[in-house]
Image 1 (cartoon, rainbow, N blue to C red):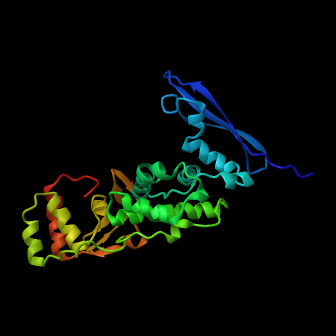
Image 2: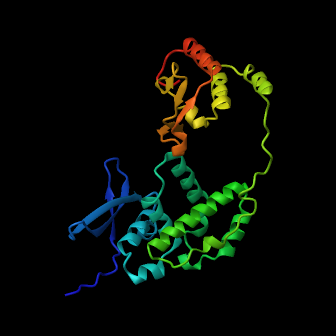
Length: 280
């Protein structure tokens, strides 16, 4: 006999932690891989963050869980709000790379969620988004990044069958793909004059950046074992962003780079003059 799954609301209760703070705990049932219903519980936040049960129920954590649990319910699609979709995206779809995740979280917290969290998914219109982006006091490139992230979030909503359209496809950002200024290119002689004015260890970093074309995040992550001085090559293997070691930005970045003899000489001098540590 077919049993219809009911819309699940879950329950919220307060618990007191060891440090004396009361927290909200959201309890619900979830079907596991064997088809058995399992009771789950997650901490949503403190009483200071959410003073009432209603506020706690509107939290991104609860909204994301409910959206996932009730994905097969017609009511879920009809009542889906942008806040719940954004929260589910944060839980399930955010990029693993720290620098990308950090940037996306900033866009969501500072711009997307404050404006769109309380808007129903199917009430988001292209021109409303376009006008909102125009009004943001941000560079066109940043506006373009925010638009792209919103497009990705709506793609997820389409895949979750919460909407049958992506209004961000029609949104335009003026100047989002254009450079505001023509890049200034310095000559080798100008570069040499610049380098000799910089104190170490920044002089060697600038030399590596100028001669090898590495990103700052890749330069600060270099280790001495990455260099093959006899073969005059350097293997790019990692990056550091906000103090966190992670992957390089693209697969193309993970490659061996040839070293000019002059660069090898400068690196050897740097190695002799500075205490040996793991990072170059």
